[in-house]
Image (cartoon, rainbow, N blue to C red; front, side, top):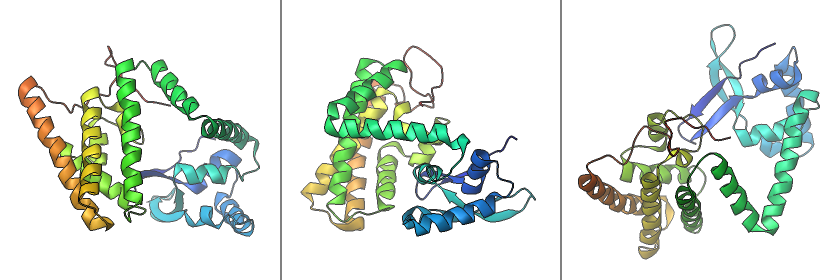
Length: 267
């Protein structure tokens, strides 16, 4: 039986959400996935998995009868936790993959260089140049530095995504979702599909935002939003100067892959 898993992009949280009962149908072949999910939810709650259950919010989706009906949805992280609790042979490959990822994560915690090398190996196999990989890894450090700064200044939950959008809008003129749409992406990592100059300007915007945040001693969402707008505007000015000098746009619909027009989709 082929089953389409319904999904929606949530602009507020910038996450792709999936129908839980559809995933359960695929993995268990249950004739009544709604009942299966209800029983599983009760079991998870009794086993102390309240956090997983509460992260499954209701969302209206098109049902089999053609009507919009509320169904529980979850992001990828929450779905993986649910899958771990499903006793089905179809779920075993996913569970084994989770165990492998968990082991690799523990190894990376003990030796952070392993995580860096794994990232380099992955990008190299995809055909990225050493130069691009260097920019991408530095962009990760820049992003972590900024989000850590925000965490020390009262930023919580969805505010991270909102501030990130302010930075994207400030230097590129687009939100993260609009940027993804331009490149024809869905839930792929936007930065993995940027060219070198796009990455550099994103780093500049985030690094400058961090410096502005520290120099103005911003606290709370409103002050950090102002810092993000100022920091990203500096990157925007740099972008305009580069484009005026080179006579070509920095932002393009292309997904970056050297010496190829092929659109890439990272695993």
